[in-house]
Image (tube, rainbow, N blue to C red; front, side, top):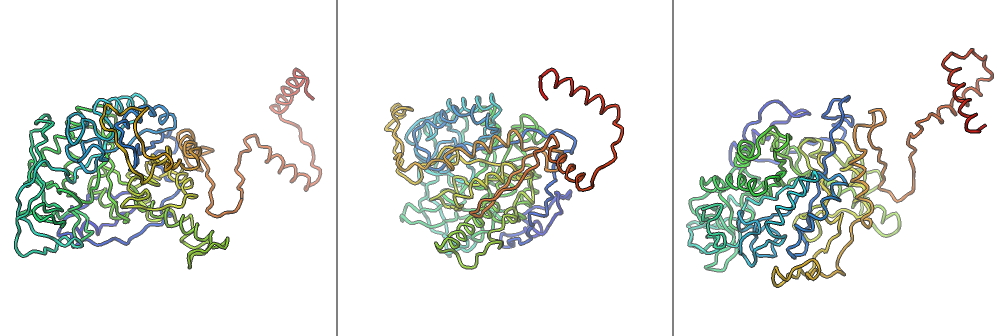
Length: 576
């Protein structure tokens, strides 16, 4: 991998094809420290010719949060608001995992069956937490009608809630360095790795999953012991992230993407998904740092050849964004290059910068008002300097393959990747990703539009028949947190992006100017709105008065005609 990571291209992207990122073991990886400041990307940079019309801005919305109520109504909820989202400029909606989870209340990241979209009686219900298959199909169709493409959240790293357990030889590995094997000899464990999918009865896919399709698991049911067990005869994929030595294993039963039956079934699944949702707009790939880079590249190539063929960006092709959580934009840029620029990634560094600067600014303000503060933080330092917000972000490295965001379901309060951003700063952050050029495709978070129930108890209807929009039990309303600024600011920013955020500040009047500050003082900045030249004429009059009387010149013919026309207009209107 070191050869792959050693390439440092010039901006824009290099023309050379990078070597594979798996030239050796994951121990050869090193965190990259080559960083780019925001100033390395000119503000006038644009992928389109200056004299060509800009295409409509793309804007994504994450159509859920972690704490959405498990009322089987979410697909209907999304279908209902699609027209409004389209009016605000939304062109893509990222929906939660629509496949059957380990239980009817599961968000879908605890995935059980890829081929059950809420169609079969499995794991406590026919529908998923979000709704039934027919409602999902209607959502995708209505989205296409309004120009809002649906992105399907694909969880391909693991499986959960197996139907039966199997005896497997395995060895424990060190959770802090999965390359280190703790047991000298393999031990027989009981692993939940058997999947028959009894509710589906082999429809759509005949594959019954067993231990041979996985590399490891985190629980031995024989001894009731939690550990990371690597199955005998299996190895972790080498071309994965090097966190924890080798971050192939994440959770549940870890899928072996190199197994030919697994690869064939997953490739077939994308074709099947397209057949069930013909107007689907693309995928969001979950947790791609945990499975083979080479598999991801084959997976993308298969989609382009057999599922949604055509040049990237053309009608009918799928937009694909991956979740690779790593604050190393150079590394993510190399990853994108290895994928032939066929997928985008979320801009993790940008969210980290938002958090760092907003919290430092909040501490500084608290210190200024006598409320304490963080030592070492001063006004104008890097920790509060808005000019550094885009430093080393993926928007700088790969602006055409970045998806920028402020909050998502993983970074919101109570989640594993929680990344706090000071509340006062959230509108500023959205202004930056929605109204700034070259900030990738901005993604608006559900809770910032519609509020959040937060970490509360989730009551579930006793049955799907008992679930209706009128009588569905919801989380306690007293814990509901309204959207930022009462829901008044973000829709306006989204609409501004749709209507006016085009061109650059040097494009002859096109574009949007946005003024912001992270200090609690009132200030203003005058914008040039003098389209009739009143200010210029006033300045000329001041200049002429300072020069003294001037010799009157004979007016040109066009001036005489203009004055005559003005006099006629004033006479007709009775003005003087």
